[in-house]
Image (tube, rainbow, N blue to C red; front, side, top):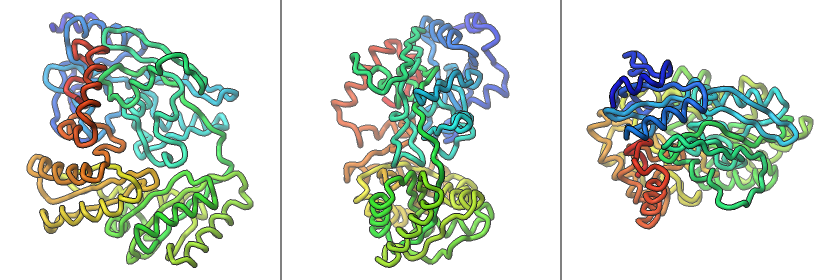
Length: 453
């Protein structure tokens, strides 16, 4: 495809070296590759025009949002163009009566959250990269995050979508209704498809009543099983647990020893740690309810100590620990994002850490995550580059996940980095159907080539 043809798209096209370098990789920083050009449309019509032209020429198009992904899903390959949605941003409507918000795909998640809050409503989708990730990318990867335990994945927040297909066809289904059984739910095809079936351009998301109050607690427990019992106690007695995060002791110790964590709120010698958030409607009573529940857990021996945040600053400090900024300072950090039934996660973590420590003695292996929805994150550092150890470490981790019937990707998608292991979590028949859907919607294979399947 000649640059003359690309240039027919006008000012949305950039081949400036700095722009190409910015869009050469997602957050994984693996296999960096400058694209042939970067297309930055400002409207859905421009997205359609760009895809129509690229489809006709058979040119690979890699959609990009905020570049916060960790699976290589937004990383271009040689000779491909990037279609960035960074200019396609804005909030088109907030409907308080329908409790919905309509957004352009390039809108940062945090912007959408604040707009909902200002309207007296609540957007439940929340992930650590909220300030830079974009709504379109959240939908394309079916983002999970902190509140899945109560509100579900991104998929559960979507009522309607507008999507542009590979040939430029604009598929609009911006419904605001929860009940819509009029034929196939086509929107669900694109949620979690990582831009391989179509490019999301507009989204209708559900909103909820804004919680009147929130209580957050950092808790030490006597172990993994006790932590699960604590979670079930909280859900049974409080009913509105919106977040429950587990931290294995070496993760807590390492993170709180780092300056980014500030002061250490609780000693680092306990067997296990958890962070919970409870959203309520009675500011005069809900904090006391949480305190009573935690006191009962301590009396039962499941909890050993608990701190209930007394200010927004303390809430933020507790979450800073869980978000583990200290780990980001380790060079060549390798991250895994896996899921399994909650009852099996403790054993899975123990097995993985034991096998990795045997193979790489002296390495650092940290486990943490959203155990209430069956998801843990494993961050590994062995002092070697990704290229030296990635394949062997992937094999070890994903074989163990397959053995217990878990998923190799709980939240971050498949991209390119997990593509070789898709059959660890999906059957041959499932993968075959995925290929058929891809062939039907993108017969020339121009959308995010080489990703997922």
